[in-house]
Length: 242
Image (cartoon, rainbow, N blue to C red):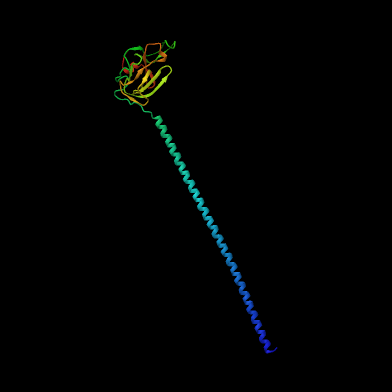
């Protein structure tokens, strides 16, 4: 082999070596680029997942907070409603009453006649004839003689409990006069007072009408008195006599 051929062979080997090194370098570049892309994708995916998880947790916390607030608001409303009902019930049960004093003690204090002092029919728990009804029954009241349209007065200070109309008694004014004494003024025509009004002794309550179940008798005020819910003789409790 000539010297010229040896030189050419050397150059060829050197070129081949350079080409191999370039190929190896290119392969390494491609390999590391691929690995870097994979790591980035994994990191991005992880970041997105973490972000979604964080948002989900925040949304869940917000919903739970809203539910808790709603439940607390509902409980407060229920408490207020219950308290309101109790308050209304208490007010409904606490009806005003007439207090007892030195001037309205049953059997001891001074009471005025509701009308004239003349008595048509007295108080009795025995059975007596009722001309209008055609039967016998107890007369747990005192009938004071008076003319239709005559003024009827309060026997003492008191609180008007009710003003009603009864088929047998006619128009009735019921007054709490204190000391557990309640009086019923029956057979009224006009009425000057209403439920809840306070009246004073001698105050005009209205005018006399008729008592349906005693219409056959002369005009009169059918006057009933109850102490602690039991009928008593009105004249006795007022300290009066027939």
